[in-house]
Image 1 (cartoon, rainbow, N blue to C red):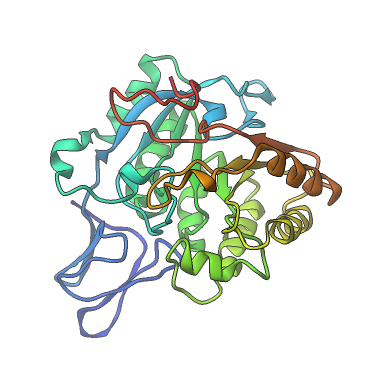
Image 2 (cartoon, one colour):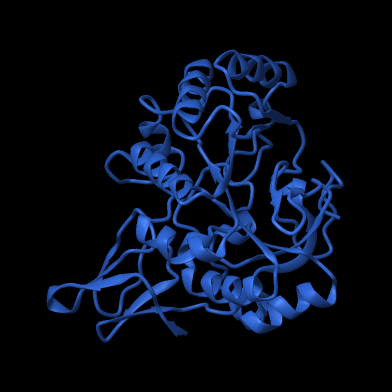
Length: 327
């Protein structure tokens, strides 16, 4: 355990966590929604500091980042550039078709499944392997700001680039905490503005007021910090609300708030988690059509992903059958 960052004490021993937009109010002895942050005698603790679900080398394109600036050379990193990818356990969403279902829930035998490492050890692994990038990925990093900021601080002192793969739910205070040490963010926009709230509440189980507005505010706020941002949307037939409307609304928002050259990745849905029906696989022609719709709104960097190479978590000794980009 480690004393948590980003919380406020309330009356009667309650604590309000400020790591993400849920802002859980946590009574003594209880945990927040993600089950990784606990109120112990009026103080908030991160329960699984140093617990990792995976530490391995993966290409930048699997996150996906395709336009990541390289501050050392003033050029872009190749999408094939290797990263030290690290992730923990747990999430503040419970998406029905979670592509990383194995690690987005806390396993009952977490002590046996976890890989234990300190921030110093993580950075040393990257340096020994001559890697230039550390990626916080797979599970939602907004629930573990303590480990993220500790690793990223050391990484920056060593001249490494750091990237953060998120569902966009971190709080503005969280952005303020990590922005000095994170070079780039890849955020999800799962459903478009004006029509996406019901999707976030039902599909992601994000039962808060105005979820789309809050996520978009976080993304826009992060951009105001001068950070490189790439966006991902996984398109689920019959579930993403009115796919064409969602894509049009999202494209317009990205262009107006982030800039027309902001990279946007439109990805095929591969059945996973609770949604295993093969009929939910996104047809290739639908993705191609929606990509053309997005381009018509004025965006210049639209990327289509048609396999499961989109930051999927592959358990140890399991070969991904859909792609080979993770290996």
